[in-house]
Length: 240
Ligand SMILES: NC(=O)c1ccc[n+]([C@@H]2O[C@H](COP(=O)([O-])OP(=O)(O)OC[C@H]3O[C@@H](n4cnc5c(N)ncnc54)[C@H](OP(=O)(O)O)[C@@H]3O)[C@@H](O)[C@H]2O)c1
Image 1 (spheres, rainbow, N blue to C red):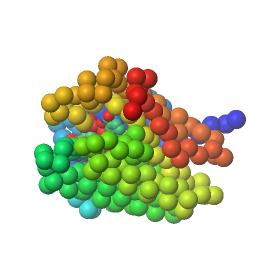
Image 2: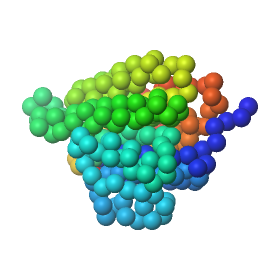
Image 3: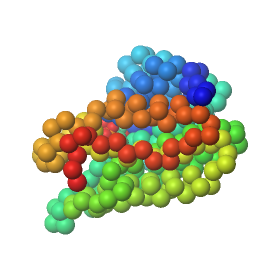
């Protein structure tokens, strides 16, 4: 069975300055893909741009015009866009007494509003182009909730709902929509936590960003008659 050849295809990755986004950028580069990357940290993106021969747009994903600018940059540089990894995200959790509602609302803007803008901007373009693949970063917390994490889980439930509806809308076309649901991944996401979830959840060996990156190339490498709407990946020590 012939699988989809990734070489020379063009991917846009949000949240590419660290963690999962950066690992996916490296993985897709190793398959010969061309990259347009975005995040806010210019200093972290500069060496990545050089290493991966990428084009970079530095900016805040909550800026409403950014998704269209990203797509335009990919098209003006490489002539097309084949994949978007909708990955930029933050996490805010806390008890009823302690949670910071302003930070929760900022999280909703990044994880939901901006992710929706990216999704619709690129899927509209993919439908016109007649090909393309949207991959959304959800979470195990897009499928269940935990005390103190209801707001974060809600942002990922929103991503699950959008992904499934879009999958239905593009069914029967060459356009793909997939959603990845990782458990705990060792990244900067929890850098400000007083107790890291690795200790709090008793997961001494969390996933590495490269584990999620392999899921992305697996999804993209399927033959045309196969679609992978959801892919959950958990550390082997994950219980609840
Ligand atoms: N780590 C986990 O355990 C885990 C599990 C399941 C799902 N996820 C999801 O995976 C995705 C990636 O997270 P990660 O774990 O790789 O965390 P990370 O290392 O903190 O990466 C987050 C990325 O998002 C970017 N970002 C955050 N806010 C932004 C903003 N306002 N504008 C533009 N870019 C912004 C960051 O770049 P700048 O700071 O440079 O802007 C960074 O590149 C998130 O959607 C997260 O919810 C993570």
